[in-house]
Length: 117
Image (cartoon, rainbow, N blue to C red; front, side, top):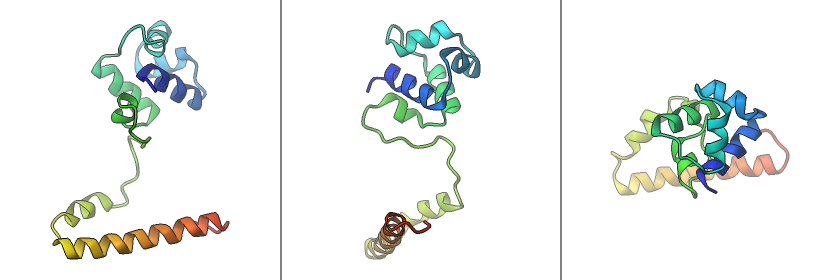
């Protein structure tokens, strides 16, 4: 999906018109229309503002195969801890990742079974 198509899809998911998105990013509806139709490419600043307003990562907007992630996701204190994992030796890191995988699988199975996640 091209940048313009992705902007259009995300805008529609948000339930906004081109004018509403333009107002939120500080542009005008014609400009948004030109982005969405691929007639012009937004500047880096415009891409950053669009990502901010739509709460998606810039890489998701720009690159085709990057999964959607919120720009502002709650950290829950995990960011620093995840960075610390890189300090572990390979064996400890593999053990930790196995435990994490087990919890994620358990949570997904519970959700599939109709339980709370």
